[in-house]
Amino acid sequence: MAERPVVIGVAGGSGSGKTSVSRAVYEHFKGHSILMIEQDFYYKDQSTLPFEERLKTNYDHPLAFDTELLIDHLNKLLNYEPINKPVYDYAEHTRSNEIIRVEPKDVIILEGILVLEDERLRDLMDIKLFVDTDADLRIIRRMTRDIKDRGRSMDSVIDQYINVVRPMHNQFIEPTKRYANIIIPEGGQNHVAVDLMVTKIQTILEQKSFL
Image 1 (cartoon, rainbow, N blue to C red):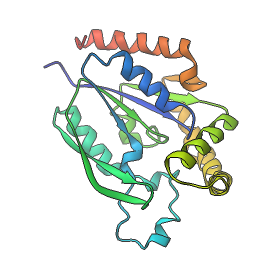
Image 2 (image 1 turned 180 degrees about the horizontal axis):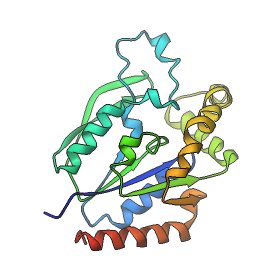
Image 3 (image 1 turned 60 degrees about the vertical axis):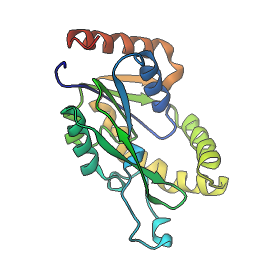
Image 4 (image 1 turned 135 degrees about the vertical axis):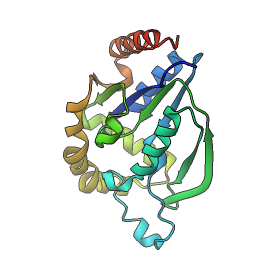
């Protein structure tokens, strides 16, 4: 077994393309020991709250996440211990009873809107990326996702974007850009930036004798 796993943090606004970037890296190194952890899976359990209260959840605020559990799970993976990753039910606005068993790997991609916001998470990362995409593209992507995958209406998505998503992005997400080692404009569509990032990661992995 080689030394401590490599952790790659990928942040960016909702709809920025950070998942596409993460997937591009994952697919490139797929034949090797690699896994992906999505911050979205770590929203807090709200089963003790009435459904009406859950509907008021601000999913773009740092306090919406169970960051303590995420840090605990990341530390376990860094020690080559398996974890039981939670699953979030967006229809019920709380954590589901399902869990996903995740075995440790040599490369961990941690992806989410606020993975660079908490200093404790940043300290566990070897590479920090920020996917920077124009707001008009982000709102269109978010609208498509929430209507198709999460059963939302167009009006509710637009209302949430204006009153919650945009102010939260400006207050909490955009400022984390300064912590990034690499900023990728236009997300997964920026193939040159993704290729450069993959090359950099490959060099680090070779130095750590993972490849």
